[in-house]
Image (cartoon, rainbow, N blue to C red; front, side, top):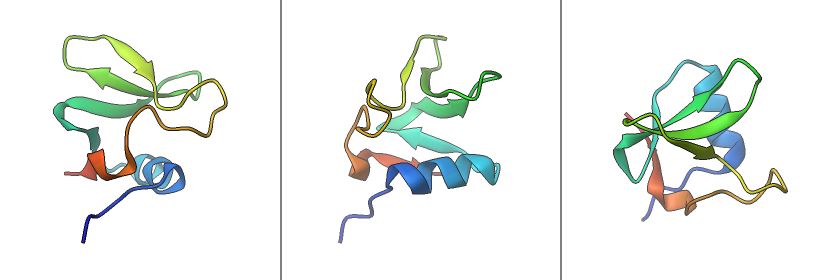
Length: 67
């Protein structure tokens, strides 16, 4: 069974202070001061957690995980 994280589960985990990652621990999901959810690479580069529709994830649900 693949464990998948939906957008709602990802946001909830962030709100609970959990560390959520995409693909590997080099890509952390964060919430910035403007309330935007982002995927941040350890180099500092960021992309939105979702497309402009604010629904479609920028990654597969099975590639997000909590550590």
